[in-house]
Length: 330
Image 1 (cartoon, rainbow, N blue to C red):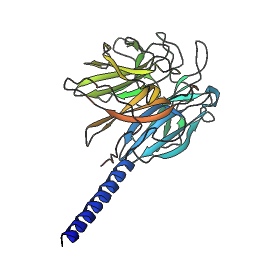
Image 2 (image 1 turned 90 degrees about the horizontal axis):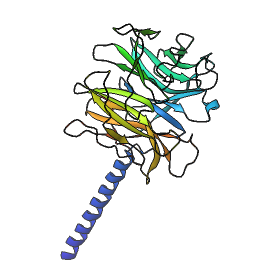
Image 3 (image 1 turned 180 degrees about the vertical axis):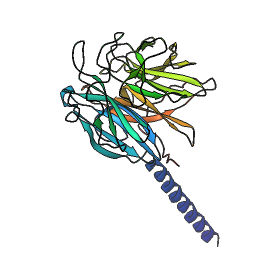
Image 4 (image 1 turned 135 degrees about the horizontal axis):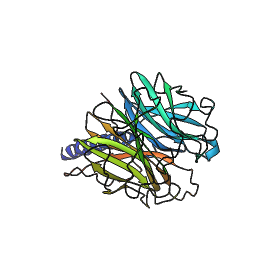
């Protein structure tokens, strides 16, 4: 009798072990993993449209080959669908060498994609363009047939634009390379700029150590301004931030929140931020370079959680191979 009881106990333990093992495996399969999709992609702009997550990255290759853009969509942050060639240089006639660093936003039922094109210098054609589509995956069409911003103002190369909708419904655009950052006001139809109250069209907001890749979001009434530092081809690429009471600063640098981990990846930077409203969870979507990689163009898109302390400061983001768990939108 005792032997029979012991045998039953062994069977129950085995069943429980297999059940737990199966659950653990199921849980493991529900992680996004990093990178979250295959391919060389950088400068990811993440956004939520309706019940779907979208990521618009740069196709990362030699400059002359960056002549198109893909995007990716997901219902849960785990499984991603690739939408190929949502725009290319055959549609943007003035873009003759490269398109990169997309910025996206929806307005009045239309979907807008802003981009940098050509490595523009003073007197050349290039800079920030804007395209429009009827659906998030395009195809996108050049909106105005020329750069929205072509000239060099305040020393800022017109690249790396981020479009920000403020609390009053107005649209601002932060942009700039070469260590300088400007903010401008956009018309509602995104066909041009509006002046500020003083009549000027450009306002410099460059924080300490800024290099490129600006990003802005609001949390609990405060404006969180973020940017990339270091060199984009090197291991020192990273993200820092500031907090202000308004969208124009001043932006006093607080510190670095995203950087390399020598055991995971290098060159972590040029990010965007996702906010999932049901769980109030923030995510950092960024690119990084695999360990041991020497090709500056080998960049991959990743996602990790972004959290805050009791004072509202951003905790350093831990970059992982695992990524994040499933988070369907309701």
